[in-house]
Amino acid sequence: MRSRAPLLAATMMAGLSACASTPEPVTSAPVATVLAQPAGAPDLLVVISVDQLSSQLMAEYLPLMSGGLKRIASQGTYFANGYQAQAATETCPGHSTILTGSLPARTGIVANDWLEMARGEGAKVYCAEDPDRRGEWGDRDVISDRHLLVPTLGTFLKRADARSRNIAVAGKDRAAVMLSGHDADQRWWWGPDGWMTDLAPPAPAVVSSATVSTRNLLDAGSAGLQIPPYCAGKPVVEVENRGRVGNDPLGWEPGNYRQFRASPAYDGAILALGAQFIDSMELGQGEAPDLLSLGLSATDYVGHKFGPQGGEMCLQMFALDRNLEGFLSYLDGRGLDYAVVLTSDHGGQPIPERLRLQGVEASRIAEGFVRSVHAPVVEALGLEANQIKTVEPGIPGDIYVDPTLDAAVRNEAIARLQAGYAADPQVEAVFRRDQIMAVPIPQGDPSGWSLIQRVRASYHPARSGDVYVVLKQFVTPIEEPMESYMATHGTVWDYDRRVPMAFYRPGAAALARHDAVRTVDILPTVARHLGISLGGAQIDGVCLDGVHGVRCVD
Image 1 (tube, one colour):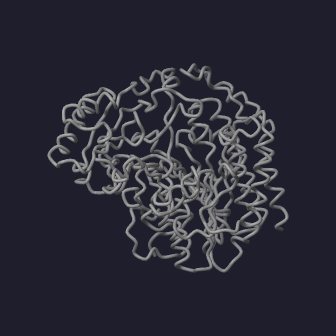
Image 2 (tube, rainbow, N blue to C red; image 1 turned 90 degrees about the vertical axis):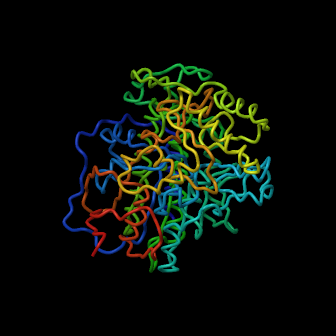
Image 3 (cartoon, one colour; image 1 turned 135 degrees about the vertical axis):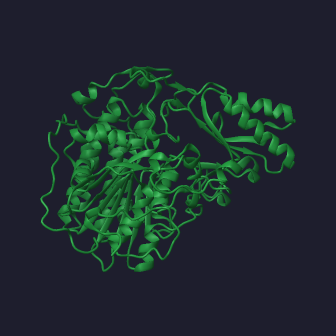
């Protein structure tokens, strides 16, 4: 049976560079005929996080689909109103919630990057690095799980039975790290030199083989996919510094990694390596349940490069549907007792140029905005410019004030920053550290959380800033669009917070649910399905009653 994995890899990766067939609308969702629910825990749990897959995208494209994404949503328990409930709707904090049951306020992953002012020039810390080992990997971060403060599902599985395996494959290092946590058996992501890991060598033979096949695909280049009529009907817009955007076929020039990762073939490579791990390690065939986490990154790269409402994202969505159908068909062919959880780390903000076509007042952040607020404070208090910092120059969010300043001067700086930002018409709200920490970590239905509750959900006093700035809706925090970065996410608003959540198990009853749920609810729900204890761990999530007929309380 294992000999089929290389064929799967070739099909899932190389096949995606061919022309795509035109998707036809599906008039009715296929629903499995179920006589009885599957008994017992699945032998293999596959957790799929599709980076930047928003509920808005799912609402638009599911009725037109007929592949794997459609199957998971229509034949599983599908929550259309899932939430990455916190303000920090970025890749790292979003992934940190999925298998920990905890909001970023507990996981400690408050953003993709934060500042540790005591480090001086090296104050910027990446969420998945070991900053004390800088330089060991040359110019790259030394990837590590040290910043994650809580256990993931993989740890709980191993505590219940040490024979369980915890494997992660992703397009981004931070996705692989946050999904697998502290007790990974294997975790891999694609990097400049091939499939990479932070775990001890040697690399399994399947990884070496996958590096060769993925590199060959990358080096071969691709003209991309044929754009079907539905996608071609998306309006093309003019974007400053980018020209006309809306009809790119998602191909890549030979060896161009940045273009390759913004293509469906990138997801195909991730799924292919995941499949090879299933075969080579015989996942789902042991005496204890196994976990395979897959972080599909292409949707995010497409969203950043082209925006989430264009023909490019349309093309990616249909390709994702086909990619996932290929993977599910592979699982079915293996005869495994498996279950799938699908969700996302965050949504995505439409670009202003498209929002204006819809009559929405939208803009990009004013040039020099942050500097215009900070400069008067620095001058009035006689400070150095680097004593007030943002994580990314020119982008508000967490604002850090030098902790070594005299207390009175520091408090005055914080008060002036709050007043300066609050006076700007681009800003919705500004909160100080003491205001945020006075609010309990929010619980329950996330749809009604106040802005400060959303901020509190991803605020950790040791890592977050002294002031937190919330921009108004539809203000894109990018001054000038760039080749691979003209759209983004990371706000408190629902276009970034709302994500799908689906639980699929072949043979289980299909159910569409509309109650508001959170990604932190995934851990306690699947723990119940797997029959494992969380040992009294303090988490924010709750078990979702009735998923696949399973009761949360006996």
